[in-house]
Image (tube, rainbow, N blue to C red; front, side, top):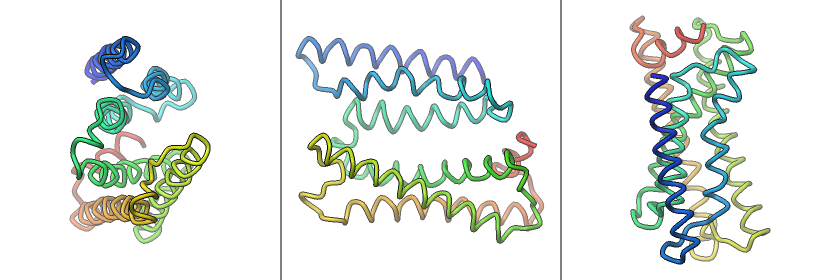
Length: 199
């Protein structure tokens, strides 16, 4: 899995560097700041691993796949503009991934108890809504400071913001239902296997 992660990082950096070069030559139009930020973001799991052994190769892979689809394909290669449903899909996926983050936080702070399923699910959904809300605040702030319209306020008002949060919520609900199913059936499929690797 470590080799797979390194291959994904290498491919993303190669494509990213190519986009920067083409943009500087005037043959492509990509946000240079977004491209530059990718050089740091892809190495975040490796940096965080120095502070916590819980950040394993599986967590790094999940993170890299999300960055691949959200930042490289979505923002740098303009999938958000090309594919009309891509933004909603990514917010749905973000709901699932932030649910994994919530479980990770429970384990890191020694608060995970499989018997306390109601609390776990409330915590998972709450973390997802918090992250989704903070992301929309970030977009709103960036739009106002940089004069952009990432939230599509000019065309949809608050519709785009609410759609993004709802999609994330639906992703988290799906995750919670799968988690509850694994707990009731006492099966280690995806989520409980993920937890098992953390503990």
